[in-house]
Image (cartoon, rainbow, N blue to C red; front, side, top):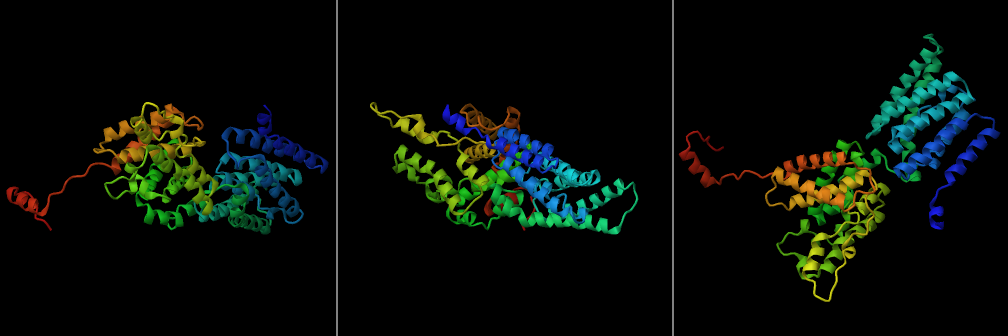
Length: 450
């Protein structure tokens, strides 16, 4: 009971109360936006189990925006970079709801500091910036969003002035603050990624570069695992698109999920070039230790190469606590009368996948490996195998801690079957030169070779 109470996070409520008290004593009407941030950050983060989406991060972004506006509002008010915080929030959290909430809170704060018109410009600017940079994968997208927001801010000012053009310097300020906001966001994005312990699409694409030292090592030391990871990444990305979650995160996570096999690549079937299997001379207990140890080795490599926490989660969770079935069966077959084999000893340590992306990579990893082992990979057999594996993972409880629905699993299965059928379909056996000559003589319609 004491441990359960200790796990309850009460600090968001204390922080919210402290911020509202600060707003009250400073006679600034910030109670509404701060309360919105507090409630959203507390309840939404608890429901989604997102570590970076919490009140302290939301409050920090809001207070930075408020402090900047407070000092800039004493000068040319239209020079305030209204869209900076919503734009930064969209990139950091990859969540449109959060950025729109930040835009609303910021507009209420600016309204309390200045006037209604400035609050409206701030709101429109924040909403436009959030929508334009949502899902951005290139830095140029952020710059273009800043330019577009500059135009939108100018049009909003014209509308508020009842289509009466004011001083040209006002529009110049709005244009400059839109572009300046996008440049500042790109400059400080890496800092906030470090502070919030998160990854944006831009940093994920940097990890997807095949020149990364870990991926280069896999090409040379574990080429089978490298190819397996690429295929798992591709089918995971397509499956994530089908169910509407972060496809880029799943693809990059799949690239690195098996890096632990670099420690002993020759003990994994995809890297074995000869017919002999190193596990033939080992006991099932020793073999399962080597197989299961690739998760721990992967975590050590991730720490050494300073991979992002979001990628580390894929390494840790891509097997959940599933059973190493092959060696468990071998242990049962070699069991003597006075021995006992416990299933728990042949299970990965976990944890189970916490997100939809990690769960999809878990399923893709198992389905791709099993499909590769099929002797006759016809579409019907691949479909039967994919459905069987997904059903077994569901029954085994590996998907209990993520939000995948049965409808999602149907879509995922369909994507797996479609892509894997295209990759592993049977090829036509082309005739040799001798057979080709014989065929040309007997078939007058056969075209000449060349």
